[in-house]
Structures are given as structure tokens and as C-alpha cells.
Length: 207
Image 1 (cartoon, rainbow, N blue to C red):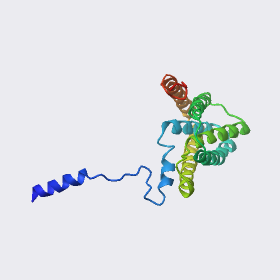
Image 2 (image 1 turned 135 degrees about the vertical axis):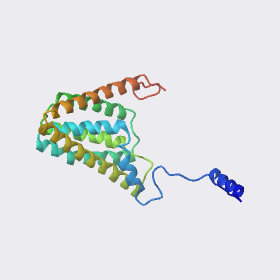
Image 3 (image 1 turned 180 degrees about the vertical axis):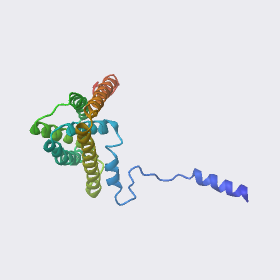
Image 4 (image 1 turned 90 degrees about the vertical axis):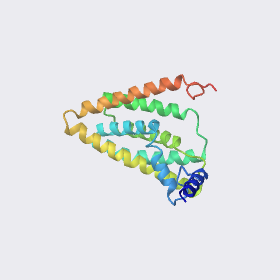
């Protein structure tokens, strides 16, 4: 009897089963896929964190503006990214943003509100476009975009709030934020160097 049970168990393990990376069998599967996509990829997560840190350094009204404009432009970019093929240079542009945002945090620069909003708008659009999925349609695409937008708002709100309080209420706060900015700048430069010498990548233009 025991040998029969072992044999049946082995047969069960050998039977192929369907697996779904994006939880397509659940009602809100694409929403959770969109929610997780930008925060599980360092090329998206690190620049988002850098923008949140930079927002925390700004004046109160300027910091609040990112909570509106960044999610809105991420949603716009994700919708267009779901309809249009992604250009090869979009990743290069986002890497450029990572380096520059890290540098701005390192320098602890306070920008004019109009300049900061423009930065958040352009960056949000390119990030949303890079997160677009052109294999989804209709309600699936809508759920996915809602997930990406929710991730943009939640992450930006949390990071901006923490950075805003840390920068002002702790003597070591400005030093800590600038140190994190230097790390992000270094990561962006190292990643850019890696991509520059990676064969077949957008930065090299080779196949």
C-alpha cells in the first residue's frame, strides 16, 4: 500500500500544471501585477526613491506637488506604453534620470516649484511608458495601469514624508539623505557602465 502511495505521488509530481505569473485567474490579478512591477525592478525602484528623497528636501508646497503630478504622468505614460511599442532609448533616459536625481539629492538642491514639477512630469511619463505592457487590452490594461499608478502614489507619499521629516527634524538627516543620494548616483553610473559594454543593449546599439 505504501509503495502504491509513493508511486501515485511520483506520478502527480510529473504531471504538468499551469502557472500564471500575473495572476490571470483572479479578478484583480493585473492590478497586483501593475502594483508590483515597478517596485520589484531596481531600474524603476531606485529612481522613484531618488525622486521621493529630492521631494522631501524641497519646500512643503513643492513636496506636495509631486504627489499629484508624478502618479498622473505615470498613469499617462503607462497607458501610452500599453498602446505603442517602447523605444529602445527609454531605458537610457531613465538611467540618465537616476544619475541626475541622485546628484540633486547629493547636492541637496532646492528647486523652484515650476522646475521641480516639470522634472516630476517628464520623469513620471518616461517611467510610466517604461512600465507599459502592450500585451494587455481593455479592462486588463486598465487594472494594470491602476496598479502602477497606485504604486507611484503610495511609494512617493511614503518616501517623501520620511525624507521631509528626516531632513528637518534630525541633525543627521541632511547628511543621511545626501549620502543616500551619492549611493544612487554611484549605482546609476556603475549600471550605465555595465550597459555601455553589454553587447546587444540599447546603449551600445549593437546586436
